[in-house]
Image (cartoon, rainbow, N blue to C red; front, side, top):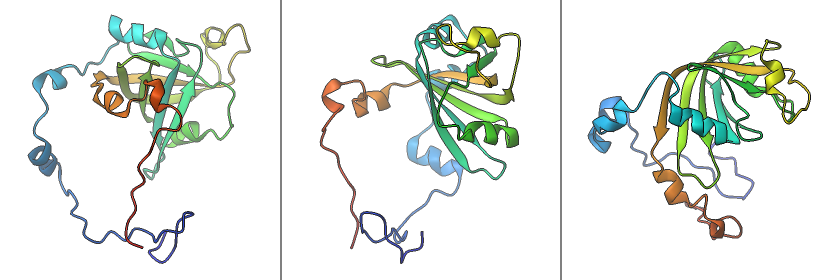
Length: 196
């Protein structure tokens, strides 16, 4: 959008004047400080019992992908708790359940295999992050196990080979109040408005 274009709300487009951008990773450390060693050490490469428990109870995750040019997409995925199939301590399979058929994630993975998964359980402050490399499968011996509640086998699945896993700090869930019912409907929001 050019500065002369307007948004649907009729506001003038943001023009970037007055920005002070971060240009290199060293600036981030200078501004935010170094992460505590415990935070660094909790990154691991194979699923632990705690990770498996969270996957077994999670009905929802987001799948983040990007195409060959780096254009990003984050897509929600959901099913009955435990819809993600654990093949081994370093391999997961996510069934393609009926949806809008855009297949953005699959199209991206065909160009760039790197994926990020973020798992949530409603009401629980644990967040599981998994980064890895994926491929799109149209069949495999485990496809029968991916069927939801005795339903049809999925036509496709996303197979993820895990590179790293970590439990994320729950601070963002606390701040957002995402699991507090009083924030779910008609909560007052804050719209940032700039010069008109």
